Amino acid sequence: MRGLLRRISGTWTDRLLLVFVLAAIVFGWMHIRQLAGGGEVMVDIYRGQTLLAEYPLHSANPVHFVAAGEIGETDILIADGEVAISESPCTGKQCIRAGHKHRIGDMLVCLPNRILVSIRGDAKAFDAMLE
Amino acid sequence: MSASHQLSAVSQTCATSRPSLEDLHRKAQWMALLMLAVGIHVLESALPGLGPWFKPGLANIVTLIALIMLGPKEALMLAVARVVVGALFIGTLFTPTFIMSLSGALAAALVMLAAWRSIPGISLIGISLLGAVAHMLVQFVTVEALFIQQTALFYLLPPFLLVAAITGWLNGVAAQYITDHLRSTRPAMEEAVPGAAHG
Image 1: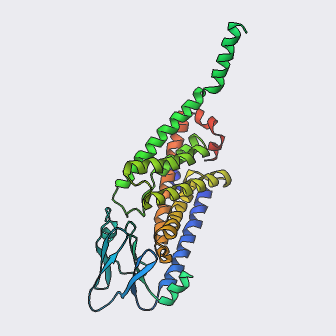
Image 2: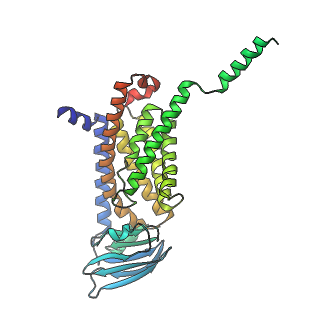
Image 3: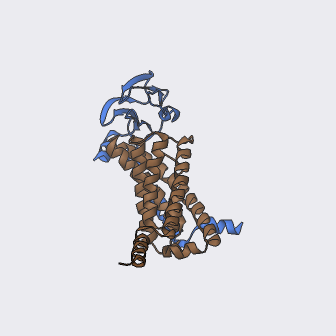
């Protein structure tokens, strides 16, 4: 048991590096969350760099948007405070398997079709981040 | 020139142009490691996971072993060759997935070589950790720069980096175990690469 622990614990340098890496990740995470928080929650739908549409995440009526991408049409559903990709022309269907998203900063990506669906918080903070 | 002189001249030419047995042995080892890495790469691509965004990076264990067994140049070549040959098998050559894999693998290999050379007291675990994090970072930058030009993509980065750090650490443990085992069964390996004493 002690041998196993020694084997997986690495050298002091390794542990120091791990602490440094984890601290950088946590700091980056907090910074990003801070930038993304506040304001009305919106769903942005992009094809590459082009913003195709933006809808509020918590709208009264469900939204069904068909995004024309690189290889075909991606169906996006926004309902009950959640967004999901229901149909996609890609082969992997990873974007559909990603399921329903509802948190700020969550994202659905269909790389083959170049479609990105992103949940965004405060618009000003988002602009600040883009800069 | 007498016949014996001619013969010795020919044998000398042969001796200089033909690779030595040790050279051939290293090349064979490299090829064997490449096949192993490609096998793992292809297997990983078939794994159900978090999509093309995230793989456990098991093939990186082979790069680490190559680094210790054969040296930095061979490890770098192995990382690149693994992605190219693997893509031929999976059928993703020159697709976005391939470019992501290649950029990530190249960045990881370069960072690992730099760490191996310049950080005193680091073991394969630390090297693997840095490689995994570099792999993930460069993949994100590549996707953002080439395919989806949205800075918002970086919202996803921290959780992915966290998982990469964990899997990088575990892969390093595996690589360390394997190289320790190889060293104990083949003591000549340590003599072949002086830098191996580093790990």
